[in-house]
Structures are given as C-alpha cells and as structure tokens.
Image 1: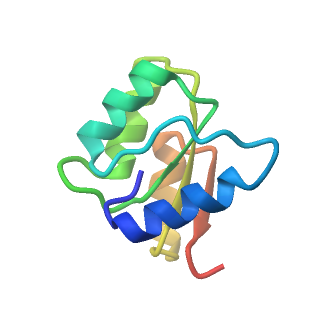
Image 2: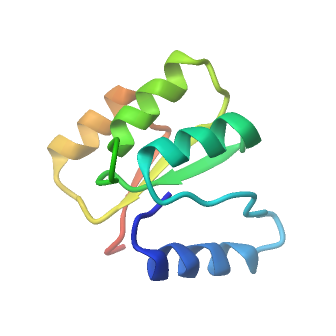
Length: 100
C-alpha cells in the first residue's frame, strides 16, 4: 500500500521475483487498502505510514479490530522512534525504513 505509483510498482516487481512471494493486490490509499485486505486477506501487507484518506496506523488498527489475520509491515520513509512506536502500538508486525 503506497500512494506513489512508481515506488509501489517497483516494490511489487521486486517481490514478484522471489519464488516465495506472491503479490496478490495493491492499493494507493488507506480506505482502498482496507478494501483489498478485507477481500484478499493476504498473509502480509506492506503499508506506508503516510497515506491519503487514512494513515497506515489507522489502517492497522482497523485490521486488528476486525481480527483480520494479515500481518502488517510498515515500509516507510519515516525512521523516527515516535513513528515506529506508534506503528507497533497500532499492531504492526514489523517496521522498515525505505532508506535501508
């Protein structure tokens, strides 16, 4: 889930090269992310923190509230401790800065 199309496509293309990864959906906003995750129930969802309509942490809290078994991993430009803690508190499984 990434609002920048070029980056989203790059991540999807890169993950598709791995034999154990299957990209089953993409979204560009928080509300779209929830729709896709509710419908497809992927094992893992990669989310950006800053998304239009609903931020990644709000999406994660909703996934948790609905008991959807998808694990959320944040892939974001934000690498400050405050964002990491907010994301983990929201229910994120992991957090990775884009500059890694």
